[in-house]
Length: 469
Image: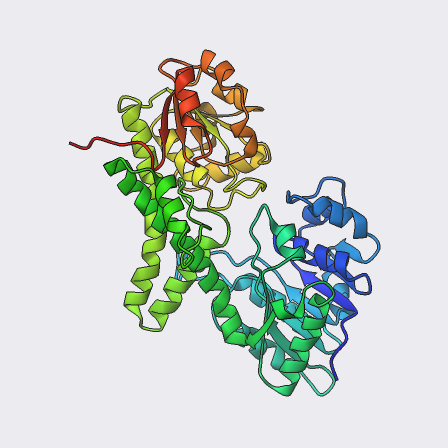
């Protein structure tokens, strides 16, 4: 007999847990969904008119179901006690110290959440690993939970990785390519799997709901992100060749993408990929390969990250060389700070690396992003690699518009592909810039020929022939 899920608890109110469980509440009016987090300010924001996460369509869904069958609270214990099914959707950052530093995921939050469930549960639970985790993390969770099981309380472990793209997360949740649910292939494990299948089946066609064993599910998440990031690094490597030969990266990508075996997606050259998952998941895969004594495999995946770092450094180097080999005290307008459009998330954003390099070259940096707060920008730039806050304040200004950022600037650098940057009045911008006025398009979104007719000197990744003789 399949367990019927009537109450869901989600531990973690971040970029994954919040949108995912909001959509579940939106589509499953017969299920009460409670999202919990120890961060009181974050929960207060979820209960306010200004949500802590910007994601197109999210506010409509939250406002429609909040207080009906969707709740946000800091009362972790009560939510765990009442739930039939618990999503563990806590942060799993890359370790900064200790064994596996720089590669392995820090699972302290996952373990803490698991122990909390074990300590307070008074009835049997289905525990769902939702965070992005290394392969076989569920084994550790299972060991902790089983050690606290008895004849009256049983815990079933499932893996249900997210495949969300920030900026389109709500669309991805409402109409997913697939939902992946991994479980132990025992009678109890299969029953638990089926219980979660029935939750998603409220709106997802059953042929898109895939069930696998636990380990396949965990590895599939890392593998999917690694393969996508690999495509980006591949096209970025080709962009460097285009610049050296006079080829056009958009034309090359279009020609390759017409091959049905390859397809056009994720073949857009840029200054580099960012976000919370790609780099972290690839580094997890590198660490896993090393632990399994597969050094060649580890080196292969590590190169995807190395190429991404190279692309950012190459872009900065080209900017400096173009601006007569110095940017000291020159005003650089950086348009965009989020790692991609339609999100306020800055994790691993290419803009962070670029701005830090500009600051270290003693440039005056003006930053504008429509969704990233001033506090977040200064937090990201205050991380290791930049001097004290006083020095940062002297070098960095946060602008309220692209026009303000560009006034008296020596160069504009496009680092996020926000649609509004395509529609700016560049004639107006050109008139107020220092001459020669440079634009460096790191996202291939601008009409270079039109800008050149205005008077700009335009440099676009993968398109501008660089004479190296």
